[in-house]
Structures are given as C-alpha cells and as structure tokens.
Length: 373
Image (cartoon, rainbow, N blue to C red):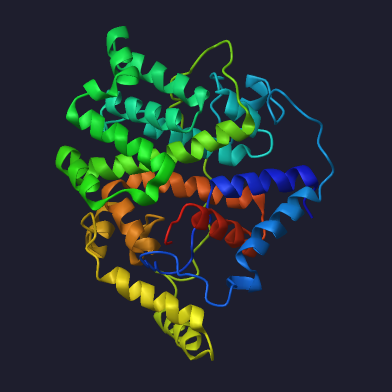
C-alpha cells in the first residue's frame, strides 16, 4: 500500500497524465445528461468528487510550504537517477530535479517530450515559442512564460519583436494572431473552439502543422499545471534550452495478441450492454454517438493503411490504428504522439495506481473540461 505522500504524488500525476481509454473511441457530441442522477460505479456526480476529496484528506497533514512542494535534488543527484543518463552531467530544469526523486523514469520521458516540442521543424521556432508563451500567459504560469521568452530570444527575436509578440497581439501577422488566439482559447475554454477557427488554421498552416500545434498546446496545458502545482521557481541559471538527450527505455512488454481487443469479444461486450435491462444511460449514450457521427470532422483522418505505412513494422503504436484520434495523431505527428504515450506508460509503471481509481479521475477531468471523450 502506498504511503500518504506517494498517494498524493500519484493522484497529482494522474490528473496531469489522463489515463488512456482501452476501448475503441466513442465520440458523442456532448456528455449525456444524467438520467437517474447517477454515473458509472453508482456515484451521483457530486458524490464522486466528494469521495475523492475525502480520500486525499485522509492523509497525515503536511507542513505548510512557501517554496517548492517536493524535495529539490542537486543537479548531480537528479542526473544519476535518470535511466541511462550519459556520464557527462548536464544542467536540469528545476522541475526535473523535483520529480527525479519519486518518478525518475517519467521525468526522463518528460524531458524528451519537452525537447521535441521546443526543437525540430514541425513548427517554426518563433511560432512555437510565441504560442507556448500565450498558453503560459493564459494559465498564469510565470515559470513557463520565462522559458518561452528565452526560446523566442534564441530563435532570433529582437527586443522590439518581443514587445510586439507579447504586448501588442493586435499587430501580429494574421497567421500569428490566429495561432495566439487559438492557444488562449484552448487553455481557457477548449470546448468552444469552432469549425471555422480550425478551418482558418488549416488554411494558414496545413494539416501536419495544425496537429503539431494542437499537440504543443496539449503539452502546454499539462506542463503548466505541473509547474503550478509543484510551485517551481526559476534557478540562478535562468531558463535552460531544451535538453536533447535520449535516455534509456525499458523493454516494452510483449503484446498478448496483435491488434486491439478481439472483435468477437468487443461485439459480445457491446451486445451484453445493449441487452442489460433498463440501461437508459447506454441508450442515451448511443443516441449521442449517432448524432455525433452525422457531423463532419475538422481534419482528414488518415486510413489505417497510411498510418501503418508511416509508422513501419514493429512500431509500438500500431495497435492503436483502430482508434480515430490516435490515427490522426500518429498519421500526422508520429514522433510527438509516441513520446507522449511513452510518458503515460512510464507514469503508469511508476505510480502503480489502481486502474479503476485512474478511470474515476479521468472521468472527472474530462467532465470538468466539457470533453465528450
């Protein structure tokens, strides 16, 4: 059984690493309204949050802290905990020195993902830094804003450009302004993004860059909340450039069978759910799914064959080709997508949380964001 501190760290991580749903994607237009006042596992909506709050409160009180909320390792101590770290020690950001103690494998994967989003040619260096700054500003995360500004300077932005980009958004080029407005909306009210806004972005940037932009903003949402909860502060070294190091990866577990859940088993489960007497919740869900299917998608979904061809034989993401949103992510940005799933897998391995508890928290997060998933 986990002690109080480990459990709180695990719950924090799960809120930031939403569990991957292990079923084929269902896409209702909106969350179905409560029929009998109850949701999965027999809880009424308000009871669910109340139960989880009581669970976290049932821990020994921790002393009030005004600085970092997890112990800060020295750079050398944190580096040695990262799996397969090169012999030459490199400077680590403050958040990695905090997380390397309880979650070293997850920290290594997060450093790799952070570097991918802050480098490469998926998005222009000025555009990605500007968008990252706008997201951090919307989230009131000064730590992330400082990093994004440093990245803008490294991308060649002059002081005059920095003032324009961060203080006078109305004077931005149309493409930049559209990306900045989209970033702020995604942080505050992502469920209000319209078809026309996405269509405009596709016209400016094309499909691959729009998927990269959305992935960057999803990462920003996760990362800023992590920084804020950890109360991480900028060290005397200032904002560090991305750490482009590949750490050791554990051997992936052998899949039980190729592909996703057997079709016969899936069909039998669905049939059982349909046949369950008085299952009005299921009926309402199916109705919402049927309505969602009538809507046109905002972006072309790559075929299974195209995704398999792009990933290549033996890729760990091949089993997800039955999932629509996974096909979009892997089809347009396979490297970013796999790096994210590597983070999720590492966290799940290290945290060891109960899977039902994971799904409970995942449901709360999606409900609070008004996300149909």
